[in-house]
Length: 307
Image 1: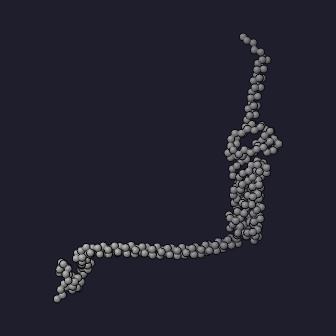
Image 2: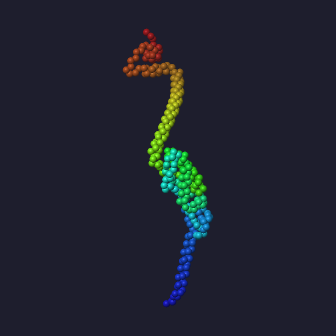
Image 3: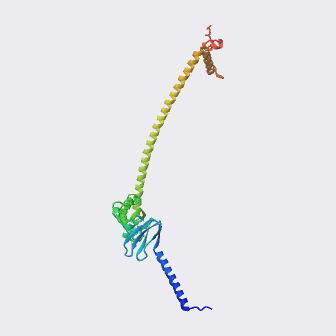
């Protein structure tokens, strides 16, 4: 049997452990130097001191120096929603208390500007957006009464809020996509008066719409009547022209036939006259010796002799 040196075996085991530890360390170091950028994200790379280095927006696999030399901060490019947790109270121009809740749809468009203001946090940006929107609403609410605020909550007021908030958010690298009022409630003591005033204004607006509709309907009917008369007149004129052309052609044909055989033409017209006059069960009182019946007395159509 071959003698096994325990010291030698121990060295071999230690070398293998050291090799495994070195491999695992190298593997971990290599993994820490690689990172993946998703298509839904932007990456801001900063140094260990927190200084900005570069922005990566295209998806793919990238490398960096291991921590603490380089750090990667992920920014979500998707549309975010900022909504107020509780309604804010305001006084309108007619001194009515109103409670308003907002929500804001926004996204990061300039990673560097966003990073300089908020680093990689979302909550501070949402709070700043809501604060700016409520500040803009506070500046506008004194221009509107309670009824006007309710009626224009989706039009002029929203447009003004979005414009002012978007101007401020652009400096932060944020694009404001939409702002809406999710909750609009008046104080209990003012509800009845406000709703009655709103009902009266809506009734007046409905009457105005009906009046406008009646005027427009009358104008449309008048225009349609004029168009109808014009079309009928043009059709009648066209029909008379066609009829005149047909009559002229018929006269020309009759004249041509009469010129070719006057005797036959007179005979044919007399027969046609007989057919038109003598109907079944009709009683006609005429003189049988008149020229109207000359073809019945004489095939040549000679005038009848009067007795």
